[in-house]
Image (cartoon, rainbow, N blue to C red):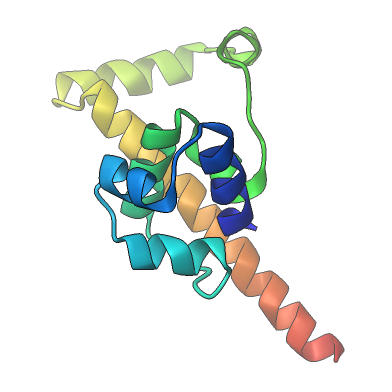
Length: 126
């Protein structure tokens, strides 16, 4: 699924496999394996590089969801507890990039957990 989404996006942007691999700084052969579903468990770092190069987000690559930034912001409700947590993290030196990386890491972990669970269910149902 991830490979299929990457291939569709790559082609819609007019990139060859070699061009995307070079732009993202990843191995052409690994990218090819992923697009053909021969490799199905890419690293978070790989997904970050590809998503940036394709102008999308990791969520879309993982599960096909893509949120418009304005829609995402309109859903954001920040209560006092969130404000305090954010202020504390900033005081302790956390940057916006750290927040984004941590968020991406958590989403990646959720995706991996979901896939492991799904694989186990498929294994027991057959």
